[in-house]
Each structure stands twice: as structure tokens, then as C-alpha cells.
Amino acid sequence: MMSEGSRPPRVGAPASASPERVAGLATAKLPLQHAGWTAVVASTPEGVIGDGERMPWSLSSDLRRFKRLTMGGVLLMGRRTFETIGRPLPGRRTVVLTRQTGWAAPGVETAASVAEAERLVGGGRCFVVGGGEIYSQCWDRCTECWWTKVWARLDGQVKVDLPWPEFRIVWQTHCPAGPRDQYPTDCFCLKRPPEGNRKKKSPV
Image (cartoon, rainbow, N blue to C red):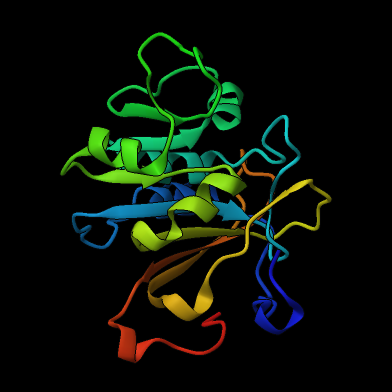
């Protein structure tokens, strides 16, 4: 969970938008991606990412951005996150990080440690997609973070603490809620700068 000092400012954003505008934002050209590991996070301003059983929101526009961003890459996730999704996603390899011996699912590769997952990924483009414990284990390997800030006030057992001092914003946009979105969102791309250029507090 983010502390009060690192909480982003409020945005006075419209709660809805025309289908044409939302579609344009969901399919807009994203910044050029680089090789390496990328964390992909959707959370409330307080850091809630789930309730331990299911996604706490429905955001069709964000799912389309997620698909475009991760297509052709490797999705690295925990077992509970995979079970929430329910299946490997088309066009991407799925690696599940789990300590549960013998766990398996069709079309899924498993790793018992981050180091083993790194060997499976090899030089491929890897997207760390949750849950909370997996983010914590993988932050030091991520050179980039895509954060969808969901403008909702929700209770949830699963939270993430984004390491603000280690990243800086290079791109952002506001996405009003469309017909199939429960909430408006802000989308950020953050990069890890050289050690000497890191900020000391939240960039948002």
C-alpha cells in the first residue's frame, strides 16, 4: 500500500466518454518498448490490486491496452493470478511462479524461483503481471513499469507498494470511463533511470 506521502494527486476527470474517444485511447500508439522485464500493474490510488479471488473491476479499455502491450512476450505471474485468469492468454507464453510442488496447467511453464523464471524467459520480453508477492520479488529486475491508476475507492486484501524512488514517468494519459469500463483511469509508463538520477519521492 502507498503511504499518504506518496499518494498521487486527485484528477478532476469526467466519469464517462464517447465510445469513439475511448476506443481511440485504447488503441493509441504506445511508447517504444525496450528489452528487459516490465511490471504491468493496475491498482487504486491506495494500492489495491485485488481481493484474493477475482479482479475488483471491469475495464475493457485497459484490457485492450494490456493485450497490445504484452502480445508476443512472456507473462510472469503467481499461481493465484493465473487461476483468476483461468487459462493461458493467446499469443504469449505463460510462466507461473509457484512453490507448490507438482502444480501444472496445460500450456503453462512453471518456475519455483525468480532465478528459474529468468532462465525460462531467457532474452525474451517479460511482463510481470502479479500478484502482490510476485511484484515484490521481481521489482529489482524490472526496468520499466506500466501502471494503470484506477479511480476507485475499494477495499481489498491484496495491495502493491510501487517503488516510486526507483522510477520516473516518461509517458502518461487520462482515459475516461467508456461504456464497458466501471471507472476512469490514468495510464503511466515509468522507466528506471540511472542510479544517480533517481528521485527521492513519488513522481505522481
